[in-house]
Image 1 (tube, one colour):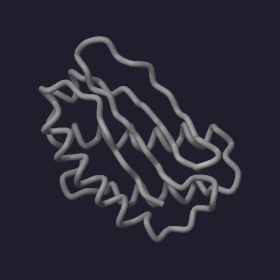
Image 2 (cartoon, rainbow, N blue to C red):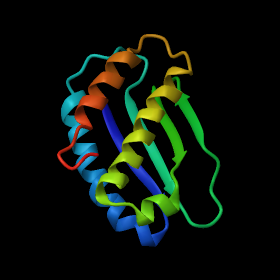
Image 3 (cartoon, rainbow, N blue to C red):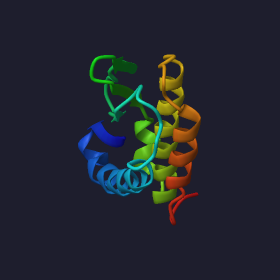
Image 4 (cartoon, one colour):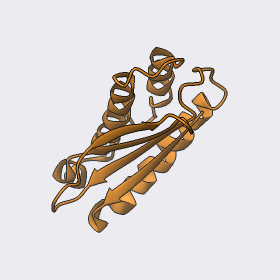
Length: 130
């Protein structure tokens, strides 16, 4: 299993988002790539949205044939823009953990969401975290 974190971002937050995303994505993937979570999901794909204008709708989708996810979560643009590095990390961390919760509501057979939540939480304990 592997996570991919993307963004639909206003240019004013894109660089800060990418820096944090790269560290978190690497940290989570180191933890979960060898993990056994079941066959219900093959990829964990999350797109975070931080725009100062109109926000697209959030969604949580799973393609049964490929077992891939497509999760879109809106994060608060203003909080992210004006937040410290620790606050920005916390915003992204909260959104990623929320994505696991939303997936767990989909009733996907043969997948251990509790183990993924535990491993992701552990991986997201970063040195600069609040």
